[in-house]
Length: 630
Image (cartoon, rainbow, N blue to C red; front, side, top):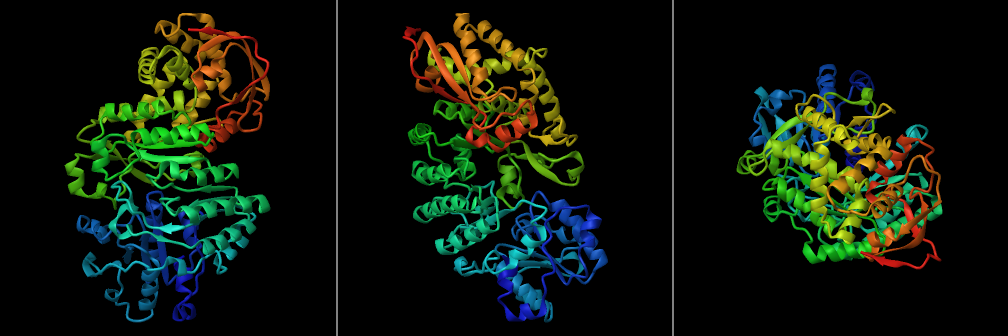
């Protein structure tokens, strides 16, 4: 986008040539070898490539000392942060200029001044290096008034050269920017800055042309860089219609990923339903981050709450629209109890599809990088290895690290570890389904609360380390501590020699001992006196095992049960007996023939947000006469 805009300036077009856009990560020396005597290099910086960029920039400066090196993106210090990092240019002597805010106009001014006297004081929106490692920050660059008028790299031919170069090697994803900016001020997010608070939309007509280009060039996955998709409802609904039409006609794009408007709730359903019907999106997101009022105030967050949230979830469940929520571990004012309470509230509201819970990453250009904010909430953090998943050990860049919160005024380090452990535990047991249907049956049949069931379940198996789940809890605790002393990577290695998220890897490990696992779950339920009738309990356990897509089963098949477990769980009906038959099918539309890696990839990585790990179960007609039980 920067170069597309700069090309519209005749002076730049006459005096500069874009030799390449380098995006394929490689060994540093090989990467630098592809750079030949540059005049200017711009680095796009974020948490996942900061160390890599610094290494490349160091070598480029050594090799080409006259090259102007510019850092942009969201990770290089903002103008405010530089007040606390006076030694930045001393510690990064290879950097000449930092760009703050939007880059198009600023980059254009830099290139023009580079042809003159290199008087960087004339360029707004930058900080530049002076002699003796000192620096000067210029006035803020004015926001672009009409981003719809800016040229598109998809439509002006720029991206065509990269499609031609890489089409035989890579499957393409693409980023679009249907809206720039965000009206919210969430303190953990860098786009929550006042600079970006006024939102600027693109027109449907321009987006339509970009999506047409993507369909024709077989782009499989589109990532929409709009923080609040659905805010412009009429336009965004038309976008959803367009995407579905393009997929039907071209087969591309296959998936459209976006962040949904934060507090619109039920109003977003028509757009999400349109994308779901076209098999283009995983469902609706509730990016809640916390339920604790004090926490929401501390992070300047507004959520849909209470009855509105329950109505929203009920409506999505009613029309079978996947919905998932997101929380963050380690936010200020959150306690261990309030964190757990938020999880159980979501369950009680009827959310059983998926819950994404993420560690708080300290992004430096947010208030979490401000010493006053950190001191106010007594935030402590540590460097861990970067959150890399689904890559081999040789592909992992050991130099990349991430600052992760480990303590606040209301949550000690030990409590934070407990929160991470409970997050992992609730993910594998409930939101990856291992005990979800047991717990939902018990709630409807015996009025056993989710809180009671899962707290007892966790305590029981934490004390029985010779069990399948007990052993996994023990191993996870050790691994988690090693992560926080920067002694290992996040996640487990599986037989494909790739690192998987802890949740995903644990599912594979447990399922390989699935029969023993469920015998131990049965023992727990009997010892807890949740169900005394073993015939009912055996039926519930049998149903639970079949409710998760089994990598060793052939689908579809018939499942005969003496009780209407399916109706008790999903419709809250009384338990009846008399003979029932269900048709069970794989939600992924395939059999896995014992391939656990494909099974985990399809269902618990790619399909988790839509609950694809759950079997499709339908009551067959002609059930025997039923007798009410309990």
